[in-house]
Image 1 (tube, rainbow, N blue to C red):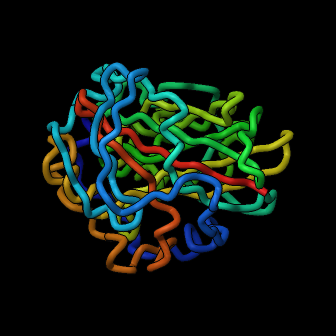
Image 2: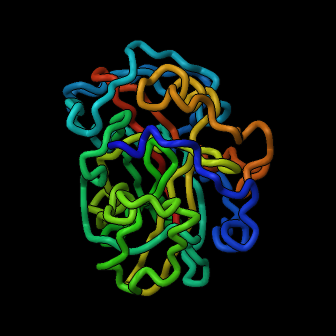
Length: 297
């Protein structure tokens, strides 16, 4: 898309009044439900996944980059790997948190429909996004609506709020979409799925880009019984983002993000980010698999 090559966004370097007050994150602790996830690079072979044998990134530091393949390009149309089965989550760490209806969702959210491929055909590093929700006893929770949204390769959020439940009244088009005409006519990288009997949702997407003052991240929202909500976000290890942003053709022109996790300057996480890191794997087709288990109470 043409806007992918536009100048970096002229956003404020701090999100006072836009982000810091509106994307408050709950305090999370690691759950003891699943197997221990070490900082050692692990290779998984899953017979049910026709193309996703690869190296798993460390959720502690993300410094173990054992990449066997070049990163894919071309967006989700380049995905040939099947989604892995539920054994994916056997060694995944889980974040424990309480459902709450009081947290706000930030200036770049508006509601969209149910989608499994949320890319709307945009280019980028193809990514499989898998989330699993479990309860306090580590049992999967079905029937929850899990919604995700993130920016595109250029760090721009889509902005077509015409069908949003609230009319997009809280959406800040200047900040989130840079008033880009194409973005304001699009709904890319937004959608929800309902958790299945394994407590799981799967999305096809592309690795997000970055914008000033924020590390690369993906927002998510969980709705229970139509009214209880949790709103938060996950991020990626610095070593992984640096590799993608310097070696994958769709991202290399912009280079490494200006706000890393290690800098402690991210306006949401600060230096407290370990529990928010995605676990990840490079698939044989060169796509990225990002996954996380969320424990609700």
